[in-house]
Length: 473
Image 1 (spheres, rainbow, N blue to C red):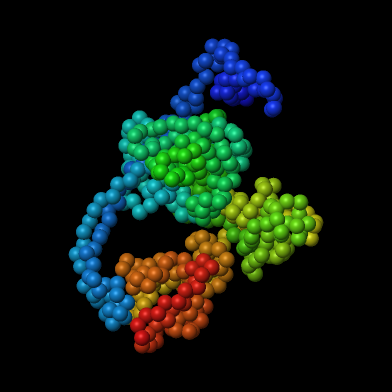
Image 2: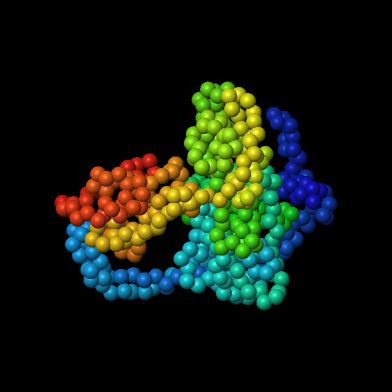
């Protein structure tokens, strides 16, 4: 394989490399043998392409012709949900994407945004056979979804997962998918980066970057290495025009492996380990103050009291440099490394503490639900009508991708036409105060909402910003 790769690179360059700074003219040479003339990606494509599928989804969208007073907080205050709801219209939305068969019995991985909200999912194989797919599990945090089709005992073409940590910048890769719905398409390029974390595409935010052309419809398709293995699921592009500009991003295959492993164990949802640590980037100034040779790693700035990290002896001020020997350059890399591990196993953190290098073994546990979430939908004549709230716990925080939070009450979701939505409230917002009363638990919130004041004053936090909304009065 190494000889084959060398020949492929030689054929692609088709020139004699000269020392840097040489003034000699570049000498072009013809192929040295018939083998070089016939070099092709075709054998890899023939092996990998049958495992890449097209995915078509249908979603029935219901739209209401609303009363002009429906979202008015004043009328909501007095009438609650008794306002006329208006007429309902329906329309059908279609979308397309790609997917990859990762097991011969019909297990398929794709991007979660390809199938999100779909009422019907159709999978079309490369030989044009169509199957109705069932949704096995989804994971918003990694933007991945697992589907299953009934292969009726047939072993379908599928791709083996490669260890994405083995991929290096400069490796050749192929992107296979269905861009713009034109049919299965193959493009080639190289790996441009192996740990791109600055795109804020999903919560875990850790990607392989490639210059292989990826376009709309490629989402969920395969990024394949020269040994014919799956190294990533194409997820997004950076573009100013809507088309490929040579900057594409793929979710690493090790994240896919974690989801597939959970499915193999019969789990409906992916349960990721919880260590109970928050941290920040190590800047040049921080590195200098800690005596580090370079700004890298994650500086620990918070440890949960019930966390296995605290039990293992991790301290605020420690710098985490690696997880199981895999480098951690920043907090996003730390979250990714932990997310690819399994609950019930053990991880070794390589840390720096006061100039000393240490290794700490830490048990990986499921995020505990302490306190109990007490999930509650708010009803009645109040401005939070239709909001579903819960107590924050490590389990709730992990499920909803919240960071920097430990205690309080979070808005999980909003019911259709919720009065709370008209106030600008969003899932993930943290309730702080209702009419001046501090809200620490769901019980606090429900007690405050039982009052019948002339007006309401709600304070909530979204990210780093606190906002106050006035209603009535």
